[in-house]
Image (cartoon, rainbow, N blue to C red; front, top):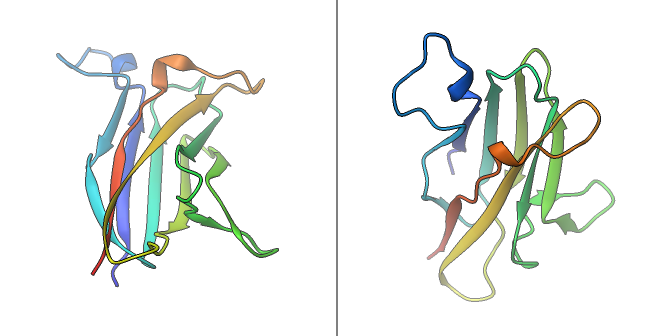
Length: 131
């Protein structure tokens, strides 16, 4: 299966001159679909230099997109930005039975002290397809 790429841009409202109608966080595409057991890559770009790290957390405990080296998988993953960029890799989980399952997740941004920046919080959706 091809990798699903989800592009997340933080800080569009900081661009000078301003871009009319820009919002703090954009996700391309939302909603989107992914086949079970397919790789997913979230690409983050922050135009706000105050953003130090980002986190993805799925709301449903069965949405274990982030495999662990020690076995099992997690519902959240955090990454530190380097020169305004970061990527988070995941794998779309299998469903308990064939069909589709919408997975709501939350994107959060943090400053260098680890304090959440609520302006950038957003709740997009990935729909798992397991034919």
